[in-house]
Length: 379
Image 1 (tube, helix red, strand yellow):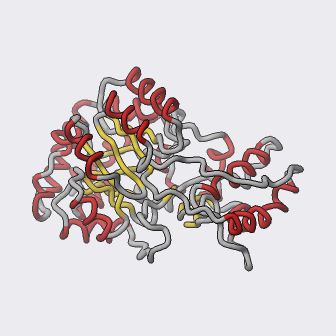
Image 2 (tube, helix red, strand yellow):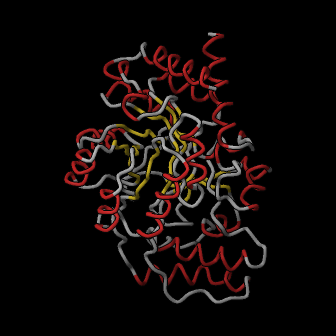
């Protein structure tokens, strides 16, 4: 395995040497402390300390997502990950704007969902809440991270204030942020963040758009990476639809310094995906994913189920704002789950979902690196 990792490290250096600007000089190992171009996506609710540690121990960068966790839960997740690996790992944060509450809109959404709750022999809630606190205003989470700084912190849905970015830098923490457009990437670079996660429209889970109400060009991963390679001096991490060594190789050829894979890791035994989620990903449902806001109030790609079909039916109202709408979806999913019905829970997956493989995380990393190595040797 060590020989494979070293081989891929030099392959990555060779491939990037053909690309323009500072990107050609990027050494992922020296900046972020891992020896392969692979990052396991954070995937809040699916990623676990066990998954992140297994990936990091295999020489790549494991990640945990704490955006959906309380500060105490996040502290425990970080401590657990540290107990399982002495290597670098990434902690991901949600930087969305606080929800714009609209009681009329929320009531209309709950009324629209009421028949689904009735079908599960329960009543729709009369009130839904902002279940996730944004890192933009979460002082306790910020202090917790500074008290026990991880090697890498990444931001999704936006970027924090300049003083927080500076504080992470002073603490020796490397930073990444998701961009879905050239404009978002320019804001990330101007903020002094260390690297850009270039998320294409193929990606599973929540789209990292800064403003969910703005026009989204829905650039593919390949197009976004290629455009950014001409624009930015920062290292680019490609994300979206990448499932194997061939996909990683293609992104490196386009100018990326690395690749972030999420759906590829969902079937690993270390992930928190439940049996129903795993069955869907291994079946025909994996071939039909959709980018929709109806589950959470923000655009996110998942396997199509009854909730999505109902939420996007003709005449449906707009969902409540993120993450308020997600509260309703989670309550309905929980009620249905008690009846062993899994048509209403979010099952996030990217367009490459049919390529998912079921194996331990370390074995998947080894397989990906073998595939990447064989491609370079053939070429």
